[in-house]
Structure formats: C-alpha cells, structure tokens
Image 1 (tube, rainbow, N blue to C red):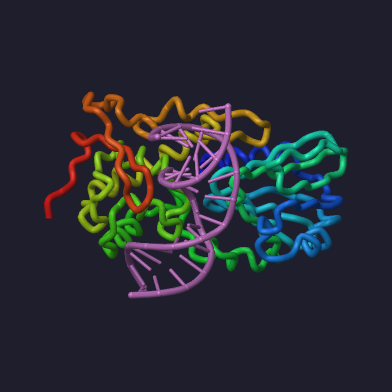
Image 2: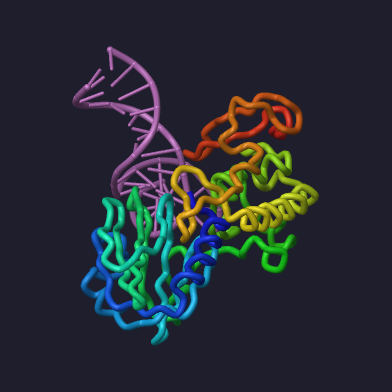
Length: 278
DNA sequence: AATAGCTCCTGATGGC
DNA sequence: TGCCATCAGGAGCTAT
C-alpha cells in the first residue's frame, strides 16, 4: 500500500522517465479510474499536453501539464506507473495507457481498481476531494509541535486512526503508523488527548525521521509496490513491527500482538506499548 | 464539528 | 480438485 515514501519514490521515478514528454493520446480501460470526466473527455483534454514536472502532496501525485492543467493521481492500495515500449499490449490490470512521444507508453496498473485520477485546472487542485482539507507534510519545516499539541488535545479518538487521518497529518498510512507508535512506545488505542506533550515531541521526530529514512530506502515493498522502474524498495527490511506479529519485540523480546483498530490491522508490543489507565 | 460506518475491488487464503 | 466464503485496506461519502 503506497504511503508517502512510496509515492515520493514513484514521483522521482516519473520525473526521470517521463518529464518533458508530450501525451499524444490516452486509453482508459476502467472508466471509474477517471473521477471527474468520461474517458472521451479525458483523452480530448489531455492530448497534446506536455508533462512539465511531477510533484507530490501527501500521497497525491500532481502531474503538472502544459496549458495550466494538473493531473491529480492517487494510487490508493495498489496503483502503479511503469513505462513500456510503444505498442506493448496492456495486461489485465493495466487500466490506463498514456501514449507519449519518443515511442514510450506510460501504463497505470491497479489490480484492485481503487486508485483515482482527476484532470483539473492548476487553480483548482486544492479543491480536489482529499486535497481540500489535507494536513501538513510530515517534515521538520511543515509539521509544527504546537500544531500537534493543539490537534491531539482537541480529539478523544484512538491515536491509531488519528494518525491515518490525512486531514491531520499528510502521508502516514497503516505501516508507518504502527512503526512510529512502537518507536514512541504508545499503545494504538490511547486517546489522543491522553498523549503528553513530551510524547508528542518524540512522536513528531519519529514520524519525520521514519518518512525520511524510508524515502532514502526507496519505500517499503509489501504486496505489489514497485517504483516507476519496476523495482522494489528495501525499507521492509527496516520495519520493527509491521508484519512481525508473533515474532519477538526487537526492544524487549515480548511476542508482538496483532489486533483490529478501526477496521485496520494493528501490530504492537503489549509490554512496551502500555495503554494508560483513565 | 468530530467521528463512526459503509463502500469500492480482487487476489489470497481457508474450510470442506 | 474445486467451489464458496471471508478478508485486507485508503479515503470519499453518508449518517449521527
């Protein structure tokens, strides 16, 4: 499941592979992938535009196109981009083909068909659903401790789903939420307003560092994630808890436990991450 | 306003 | 072997 580091890895790959290329035409084989127009309108609107640069906000890719248009793309669970020589036959899960100059086809593959893309005017990007209320990027500059103290103090929900809420902090998904909670030794069911300012300061640094470290490793490969070169990231080798339930905690040796929190699989150490008594 | 629940999808997995 | 049921999971939407 692509989270911020995986999307950033894809962004960098796309800039090396398709920046400066012009889109000659588009073929859409799953209509719902294009969320704000029909495939015919999409082809008519995008044909002839040049990919000037690919940017990112949270887990959203922003293809900046000539003529002041932006293609907003969210990979959701299994979306992926890769290039092939022109005329390559699309596979079962290749939902969109962008036919580019220089005899390159850019394929969008998405096994579960959850991913969505929308073509909008540059000026309308921040009103696209999901981006309208997106929280700060998890970086030293953008994620301010005072902001965290304020938003955590206002909520009484469990911290695990709170970290997954993109309107609070952008980019964190199920894997990194479990990782940073383990690092900070916070139980996933802890109410956000029970987290102390000291813990929040530590959590903030762990989030920022975890994202940067994962980007440096080209993201985490679980299930089907591959970057734009078709290569897998290596950060899965650095994970401390995700996917390790039943195995010993790397800090205390206690067997890691997996529970459900707000419909999400959640792995944690029952000894290191103690839930606070009310 | 905050928050919980439902929905979209398909491959993988398990029971018999 | 094969068939059906169950499940995972990000985020947009609806309901409370």
